[in-house]
Image (cartoon, rainbow, N blue to C red; front, side, top):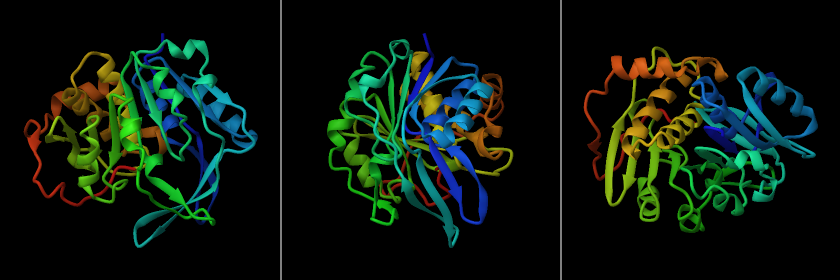
Length: 301
């Protein structure tokens, strides 16, 4: 029995001016965060031959059980920064992942993170884990790309069909370009959490809208992957029987460590997370957000 299974494409992340590339992708980082917390974790992904060895080594190092499906290519993103904002270009995309690819052993899990980065999740996946908390990291559903791979936001036309098949959906305020009305509309079908960087996360459900305060990081080195760690913490806390608000609070604490170092180096143990929650209780309990939405600030990728 796994504590968490994460499903989605691994990514090859390439950075302008840097000859070195990194293994990325929400499914990979969420699995890493859960493994660092001491949980039993499996990753179901698709990766090409040039990245498979590095991915396997990283998973072995972290204690993640890797199930890498065959692929001619790995989903690859080129990153560059313009006026301080991250710009992405999709250079290649692996085939999608459907329920038929799930090994029998992975169906025995306490929770699952379905992690979309490039429209790779087949709808059949949602019904394969009907009896456990299903956290949907929906970033990929909000992406479209031009012929040259330039990525921009798209309308999520089938949102309500997808949301009706998960326990909760997670997006960042960057994913929705600060437009909370999108999240409010989706929350009529399923709870929606919008991460808002160091401020925490906005939880929308049942017509209510609350801000679950975040935890201050000791330093901010690299925000990449914090939202992925959030999804892992959320799924695990829900699996432990906590309600959505308390699970969001725990996920905030998990995410607060992810920004403190590059890549997976900042990820925390369960003991570290629980110590931060005890020592740095948010200044107030969850409070209603203004009708105008969250104030601007750094986003959690």
